[in-house]
Image (cartoon, rainbow, N blue to C red):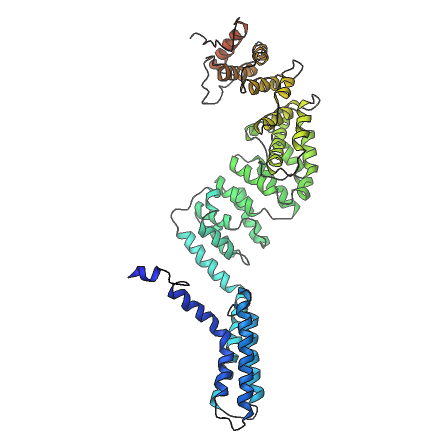
Length: 476
């Protein structure tokens, strides 16, 4: 039996059909009321014709409204209200000196509907309905036992999205959860407030205190994203300080929040960004902004300047630029970008860190030819560039000059370069040098790194007649 109510009939289920009929009743009611007035026993014969004309005219207008867009035929639309007011005026004008129970009842019905619509619109405009809905959703979120603490997962929950929509005019229900809720509840409330445009001063102060004092990275990250739209300089500068937070997810959330009006904010946060990129404790973070970020050209030029500084600042600035250019290559909005990047890679006056990042980027997109890679093998280039070129060439097939370059690099007295070269030799030439290629390279100060350095230097000094066709395994 339940299946009967679920199955659709022609044109939809009976419930949907009934709902459609109910929606058109306000449209047809004025015409029907005038048609009923036409059938009353009036002493003045012209009134029958008068009400008939009115009924037909209102029916025609109702039919026209039905053929228009859904906003016009909504039961509370201005067009429907005007139909009722027109019918009310038609009745009042036609029966000025007549007393009739039907006229009084009809006038009441036609007047009540516009007043009802006005009351509902006033109620909606006051925000009471949205506020009540937000309070109910806040209670649902507060009682939900399975809220994730990861803000990236929490922001995608249907309840949180509905809560965000309900907070459009007044974020107070969410602020109650932020101040009193558990950690998952705080994260959910802050995710619902993400980039809210109507935060008041006390809202901002409460969220900022949550970001500054909470011990939970998820709360700090969600709070920063909730304040992404703030415009005051002192607040933006306080948020930018979280670029050096101890938790990676907070640093990433801060970088994402700073993208809002980045060009305007850059003079305020430039020094903080520079210090964050140069911080040795954050060297493993990679690019400050990921590949989907759009960086203004003035800031791109400044990042190019920072790559010449070397160290952590140069490396992370180069990684950030590579992420920016990766977005441009994927977007394909500029067909000349690959040519320009190739020119930068082959220019030895460009900082090595940037050339290395861009070379890897173009190779991933198939934009580097064998001739380009062979140019990078030249002995005048920096060792990381030559190592990359040798790796890329051997990835395309046998290449004697690339193997010779690996031998030269392996003999350089530098443990970091030796371990990196050993990784390429073992992966490309199948020479067992004791590396676990499934995991990260060993730390440079370990005995394993020292042994791998010894082995790869020994490999570099050995004489092989056919190094590519007869790969050797270094004996235990």
